[in-house]
Length: 303
Ligand SMILES: [Zn+2]
Ligand SMILES: [Zn+2]
View 1 (tube, rainbow, N blue to C red):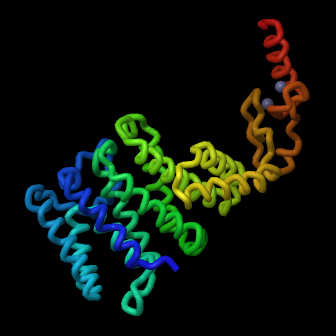
View 2: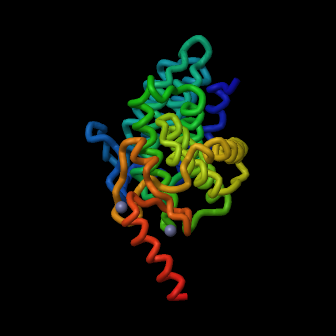
View 3: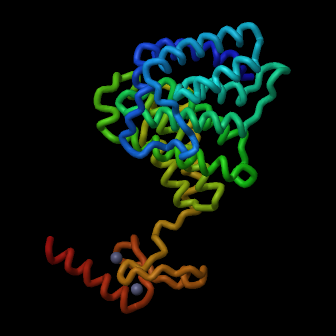
């Protein structure tokens, strides 16, 4: 069983790396509008807050070692309020795994803190993101999506996370963000994108959008192996999802290629005529099919 405390022992290493570039956290310069909700006020007192955050984080670690969990949570909340993404991530880990008998797992709180961590990361210019922290948060969220949450029961949390993850994934595909990354960080980026694409696939699949699911799982496999165990396993899982989904997805889009008619009723969809020449498109009527066939004749002539 993955213990919360284990995750803690891993996190402090990250904090030291944050200390070095703590400016980035206290001086948010959003490249795009930040994800932070309007009611979330990050305190802007730059000079003092950097030092305060460092103090708060070590205080929180001390409390955790001494099993003063309530105090640790309070301190981490304060650091989160000052804009510290790793404090928010730690709170996520605490509620995700729970701690012994003191704090029981609470997925709603865990997800709220993970989302907050994502928002705080997003407020930093993307070329300065801490990829290790981001991967930790995304991998934890992906674990919740795969094993703990239910698409129907938790639909609000589910959708909120998907929205944030999509934004993160789009940003990671921007060359500005990845231009100066080390090889190791690029691999982390890949792992993050694999986790996100897999979650998008699960969402579409649960919603009955098989072609959406298929393209998300395909995009997951296109990212390619990254050397991170869980993410690489997800690629294999995505491949088997693709095998399962492919027969369920029509190869021809149910839209008339000529006039754009998009039938809603199943019987109208069945009435579409598939072009016998290319077998790649459908038409709503013989007239449209004829006009479409002409384009094939023109293709041949122009060659
Ligand atoms: Zn038509
Ligand atoms: Zn055709």
